[in-house]
Image (spheres, rainbow, N blue to C red):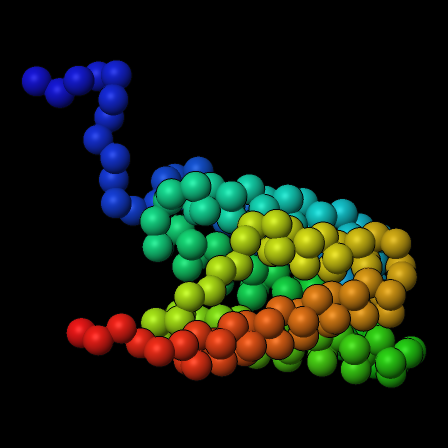
Amino acid sequence: MLDQATPPRSSGSSSSTYAYLGGSLVAAGGTAALELTRHRRFSGLTALIAALLLIAAAVAAHEGDGRRGTFASRVADWVFEACVLAPLAWVSRSGSNADAILAMVALGASFVASYERAKGQSLGYRGAETPVYRAIRASLLALALLTGLIKTFLSLFLALTLTAAVVRAWNVALQERKPRAVR
């Protein structure tokens, strides 16, 4: 007979992680729609909701939800960033070209940094991306929309993303230089 007090642990992700991710994706889509209709402050509110749900999902996945939860959480991060930065670039192109360029460069740098992390880990190099780092990045994007200080917060987002990419590359280089154990 199964013990009712301790249910068996599944190897997959919990439903709470997917609930957080589903909510964040809906909010991220709402953010994009509101940005495209030039409702920046409201899009900032939906971006903040999406960011909070992404943070909750990242924490849940980090606390042992497994690889699927972590992977789904990272994909949702990419979708969130695309839902904020691509519409921002589109809407900003008629006003400040600097905002549009900064948004597109930030989006590209974000994807390159994520690819660099994934490729390094797939090749066996140690590396980590903490929920705190992901929370700061999502918060910077939400704050850019909420406050209207687009250049300031996108510059911070870009600096953080590029710094992470450089640190990851340096980490791989250091690990490559270490002598490998004989098998």
